[in-house]
Structures are given as structure tokens and as C-alpha cells.
Length: 566
Image (cartoon, rainbow, N blue to C red; front, side, top):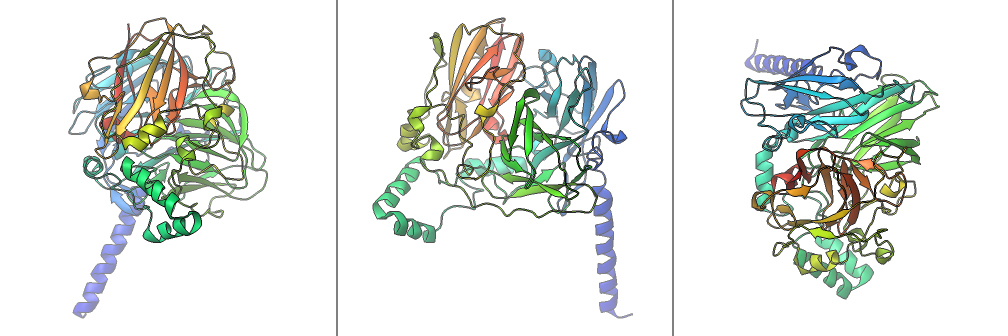
């Protein structure tokens, strides 16, 4: 046999071995995300005690093999299914070479079970097992993830579903969907690059040709003023997301669009989709073209049904929707990054193998004056409170140079913008969910008026990639934010930056004052640029609790505080 033939044969064998290996690896992750849905036996962990092992494994991510952090060999980790009223017993073993942890996101539990190293416990050392024990006093859709370093970006996350005591799921079938963003780059390197250069991962910046087109349409003077404003802020109007689809592979239940995660239904069935945004940095706009969705829960808590065609899901938020496809055809579940740099799709189908058309990515949005709260309706939606309260401002010292003078001008008059869908969704011709649509399905136990008000500002320096509360990063603060056990208080948050921030409070619920009653109860609130939101909190959880932006690199850069309830 000739040398060329031998070489070709070796290449073919090597290629076949690689494909076979990749297919074998692909079967590992994740076993719970089966097309059949809720009733499939592998989806439910039935043992009294649940064992979870954290390690690094080789898995197929998109068309390449990566080394994510896995839980029981899966990424995302197993779907943990508990029942309201039971005692959760979760044994977490660390097989990594570094400390790790698991935080049970949105779960009300004792401080020492919350899983935040340095705040509620020491973390889990290599080779050690930590036993999480807590009473399950709620139901709904939640998730879990690491709170150690940047491990969440490496796939250390998974879904958590708590069934109600009565077992009524409000549907004939259900599927759990966890969205995530994966990078083959080292997360520490990603963070260093963000610190080195503003917009390092933004490959969607405006071109010279687009500037000339702006001059043609609106004139030189207006175009020059807009460019000058953005220059003062040291950012681009297309700085929507810090890390974009050029770096990320977007995943739905651990699969990319080519792998096409599929979910079965029978025509006429009511199907509950439990949708979780487990991303490190990515907001998604979710729609199922040709199929209306009815939102029935937000962050695990029931809301009065809201029919919508699309919703934006911030990092760490969850939404439950009911769909009822009547036709015997496939539908695309389309999750598009809110900067339009990429997407992931799955398929809702009556038969495995069927697919539906995949929408094209919409044009890259830009932050104009309206996207920063300076549109024509800017002055019309001021927050008003029934009763004036003493306001306690944590020391506000806005860091010099933050976004520049122009940003200070824009942020000088923040308003409640809960009625706005957000950048890129302003002009769509279908119904998009907004926060003012959310009405609690029931009255919450604590109906007292607040006695005290705390105001916190979200601050940042985009050029230096420093993020903070009230101009002070976590390493610079003097002490925790103080709540008093048993009090009812109002927390007002003001976003003084030009970026969206999903803010998460551990251990307690936040009731969003959105003009509705009962108010929706959430664990994560997304704030738009120059937005002001008001939340009611019952300080019923003794101990120290994390409070932070859930954009992983923003938290790493300093947008993190500790709330002490004493």
C-alpha cells in the first residue's frame, strides 16, 4: 500500500475515532433533559438523600470537547426534584483540586446552608463532603450553582424544581429548560481582558459607513453630538453585553443549536415549561414563534396568568409558562441574546426528528436616549410612595470618571421604567412581558407598611471595569448593610450605570412595587440603565446574606455586599 494510502487510512480512522468518542461523550450530558418530560424516570432523584459529586469531565460542548465542571458527570448538573414540606438532604462531595460550594438560588433556608464561602460557611475543601440539610417550605422553579470564584462560568450549575404539597402542576406535562453561556476560554482570562479594555469582546461596534449613513439621515451636528456624548462616557452605544456571542456558545440544557434539544408534546396538552437563565453574563429574549405563552410564575412564585409572545429573562431569573399547541407540528423554542450576538434554539415537537424554522437574529440594538430613560415618557413614571419614610443612604461616593459627565447627566433623574420591555424590544409588533404585568397570585403573609427606607445606587467605571454599590467595591466597604430582624423595610435601588444589572438578594424575598397588588415576589430584579426600583422586604432571616449583581464578572469586580439581619 502506498504511503499516501496509509496516511489517508490513518486520517480516516483517527477521524472516525474522534467522532465516535464525541458521540459517546455527548450522551453523558445531561441525562435528565429527556424529550418525554416530567414523567420520565431518569428525571427524578427519588432517594431520601441525594449525593452530588463535583468534578471536571470531558464533554462535548457544541462541536468541540471541553473540560467543564460537572455534577454527577453532567453539565448542567442533575435536575433535583424536591417536594414542599420535606427535609432536603443533599451530600456534596468535592473532587476538584480547589474549594467549591453550592448555593441554592431562591431557596429560603438557614444561613449556614446558603452556600456562600466567606459569608455563610467556609466552602467545601477538596476531597471533603458537605451535608446540606434544610426544610423545604416553598415550591416552584429554582436552580443551584457555585458561589466559589468563577466556577459558575465553567458549568457548575443545575436546575431545582420543588413540587407543591398537593402535587398539582397545572399542566399535563412539563419540561425544564436551563439556558447557559459557555466559553472555551479560561474565565480568569476573560476577566483580565475585560479589565484591560472596555468593549474587549464587543465585535458589533459601529462602522465608518454607519456613521456616514447617520449623517445623511440626521445631519452632521446631531451625529457629532451623539458621538461626543458616547466618547465622554468612554463606551459605545452598542455596549449592551460585556461578553458576547463571539466568545460564548449558548446552550439549552447543555446542548447548542446544532444539537437541538427537543421536547415532546401531544396536541392539545397543556405543557408547562420551567425556564431558568443559568448564564454567567447573558440576558435572553425567549419566544416560540406561532405559539402563545402564558406566564404563570416568576422566580418560582405564582403570578396571575399573563399571555405573552415573548419575554426577557435576566441572568438568574426563572419564568414558568404554559403552552398548549393544538397542531401536530414542531415549534422552535428560540432564546436570543439581548445584544443579538447569538442564540440557542430547541424544538417543541410531537415527534422526534421534526424541526421548525429558526428565526433570523434581529438587528443589533443601540442605546439611544430612550434606552437610557430619556425618551418622551421619561418624566411620566415617577415612583410615588404612600408614606414618607426616613431614608438611609449608604455612603454615596460615585467613582471619578465612571461613565463621564454625560452619564452623570443621564443618571441624574432616574425613574421607574418597569413598564418598558428593554433595549431591542421597544418596537416589536407583539406582546412582550414587562414587570408591570406581574401580579402576585396570592397575598403574602406580611402586609405591614414599611417603617424604614434604604437607598442603594448601582455604580461603575466601565473603562476600568470596576462595579460597585454606592461607588464602593466589596473590598472597600466598612461593613454590611444593616437590616433589623422582624422589621418591614423599603429598599430603593437606583442604577447610575449605562448597563443592565440583575440584582439578587439571598435569604429573603423582595416584593416589587410595580403598581399591582398583590405585588409580585422575586429573588432577582433586573434594572435597566437609569432605572429606579422600589422593593418591600420582610427581614425575617437572621444572619449574614449575600446581595449582589448576578452578572458573574460584575460581582467579581466588586458589585457585591453583605446584608446582616440582626
